[in-house]
Length: 314
Image 1 (cartoon, rainbow, N blue to C red):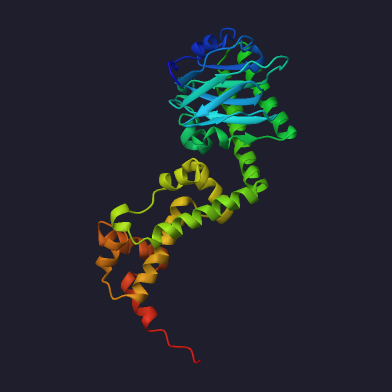
Image 2: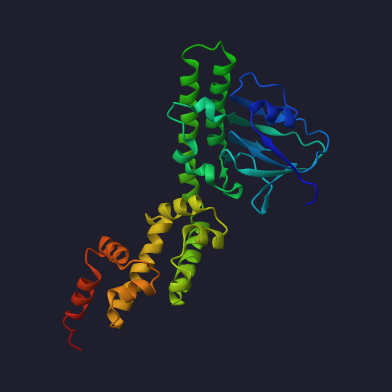
């Protein structure tokens, strides 16, 4: 898209101004209802980089989002998404007549979180690194619960600010994020069929990768590589796998690696150093350490134990 405007929003006030919303009551945090946005007239597409956190519950047609190279149009009621500082989001406004927006946006500047339990919020809650298409779809009951928490936050910063206000807002925000964590776990369970397709795709990718015998040139597959191939964000993929199998993506990679190592150990006379090199390891010690951590045996001990097994009678 040509002449795409990029906005670097450093303050909560700048977000309000961009969206045509009333000025914020607090410089470091704000809650805006979507019906306070001025999108009655068509706006140009914009690309935005935020210096603050965004948690938004969207129930609105007429705004498309672009994250990375893909567009997402959330027309469902109750879609919750999370944006961390320095992420790039592209908005495309499409005015739809008679369509009244609903939902809310919670904006929190990192300075507000300084020296609190949420100081590194995106490290503690991995869904801040999910793609927009991995947003959380809420039931009516779940939406009501989160709406209640947001109402409590709004009531607190509307009230007279005192020595307790900030901690109360932080506590409510932690509750909001804890419920979001719970609802994401529920979403992984209720979308079991789709998630198993992702697992099947991962298994095929790993099987193909390790069967090519080109690990020397390619190195071990990374979590980022696998996520890109599956069109999923790395943290979402790891959490999805953890919910299905109890193992994250890195553990799945190591499992396939150990299977390949066992195959080579039992079907060839290659030395441990040669096997390590063939599997993409720069140092044989790193390979031996990983192998023992997964099997409780060194590669040599595994080869010896395999070769010493008595043949079963035919």
